[in-house]
Length: 235
Ligand SMILES: *Cc1c(COP(=O)(O)O)cnc(C)c1O
Image (cartoon, rainbow, N blue to C red):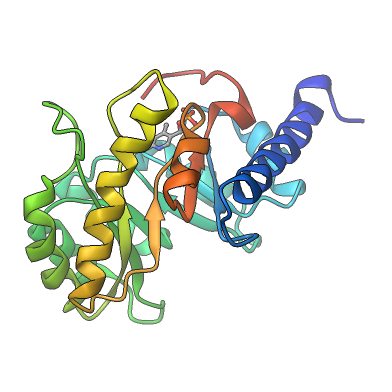
């Protein structure tokens, strides 16, 4: 039998999926156009296993050291691992080897290393550029004005596939203010697609601002605490 905490994860996942669906309907989005990435950072293996058993195969981590043992713990599963944190230069090889996606590309040197170090038997590494839409100091992400140049550079790297843009906006209390931050990323996304970059991914929306992100056009929400509860550590 499942313990109460573990069965809660199945229930929480179902609730989050229902909320995504409700937001798609409310904001006239195409049904099933918003993909759920379950963010497992700071969560123990047992909870991750429960999510996987409930059918959640896309998982996100933001520290390599924490992620590797988790990735190794589920070797046969058809899992999709997404790296969503700060990328240190000496970590690019392992990231290129073990992840399917990287959402947090912010500099050409890192992008080049990820491409060079992506094993050739694997498909190109899916990447998003992380953009600091709220222009916060000490926040990861490139300024909007630098995105076009970095996007063109990454699009030309042979072992990367530039999929889109990611953001973690400044925390805002009201729904309209939350939407306004996401709208900046959408405007940039549309600009880049007019330059024929063929982006298909807007990685935006977390536990506290998922509805606003879906209202603005998110195609991938990254949800941690709403599924797994509070994190053990706060990376
Ligand atoms: C931790 C984290 C999330 C998930 O945040 P929750 O508020 O727990 O849903 C999403 N994206 C990034 C980049 C994160 O670091």
